[in-house]
Length: 443
Ligand SMILES: Cc1ncc(COP(=O)(O)O)c(C=O)c1O
Image (cartoon, rainbow, N blue to C red; front, side, top):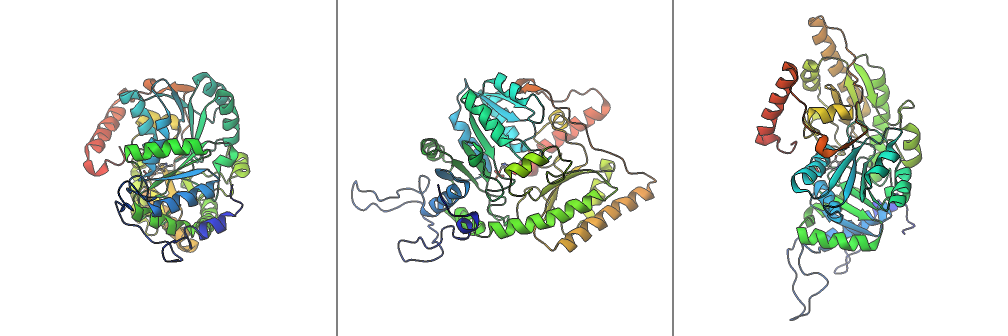
């Protein structure tokens, strides 16, 4: 394992490794294929779906950063997830957390239900009896996402990995929300780490990409074979941009964290904020674990707007510095409404079970000047307050109770029944949302 520190690994990612001309910054190999030295004598590279020098530099840098044996670069974060799932067969059980990224949830549930690719058991890792629930499921693989998306709940990676060992189960951790600078799951006992490099690793919101890092070489080799076989590997140009991005990962993360601390303090003081979700808060249930297993609390924060959801557009429209968009981890601040955006692929029942309320708002705090970010939020809250005053409405507490089931087989997680007009209308609007091709990414 590398003895270099994160700041050095990131700053020097791909630097001074050019065997052809000694260029300090790595060249970008935009080629689909490679000339053989002679008949039956291929060189190190033969075809870029299988191998590409630019992509390999990124894979090596990420493996070193996470402390793994092998780093594989994929076309998207979702393809990194798909790649990890190749280790499962229809007889195997995958345990997933009840509040993971909506797209991952959609992938797991649909592969299990529609393809019978494996069985899925959903576990709420926040419950005291999570270990019993996991053990009862007899999993081949346990999927973790911590901090979780969008409620920033924390799972004890070490404790899950210790249990997994006794069950001969693999542990995969989606480390997208923190990056290897703030959390290194392989050092806590995990077997595989996945990333959406679209987020902090690239950091500039100008590519979509993914990565998978394995603790051991054999699993890495097996998954490299599948990545080539299934065509999941990432493009050279995207790898080049992510390599450039990770060179500034550490200073970017520092700036993200500095701004986030100030914003969390500010949110805590707002009467139009019913609840703030951030593991850095002392009263956050996962605070102590986050402190122990992370090198920082991250730059994602969520809160419930203490107003009826009808006021959400007022809040979003008033913002100038926070851009209403899904995704996260870029240098620019983004804001989203997970219920209708990143997590729209979870039905109403699943969202409720995960503890997501109707006015839950998620911030990806960027690296702009904190004074501008705070002023922007302040004037958006003022706009909502004014609108509510005009309507003679008082702030409401909207923080929902998490009603996650003990352990749910995915086959039981059906869509919410239309028990009232309100639910029927919600189901209808969800259906309209689904049919809009421009929103396909969400579904
Ligand atoms: C935690 C997490 N994992 C995986 C993904 C999927 O990544 P991508 O959009 O790059 O496919 C996302 C996307 O938002 C994410 O937030």
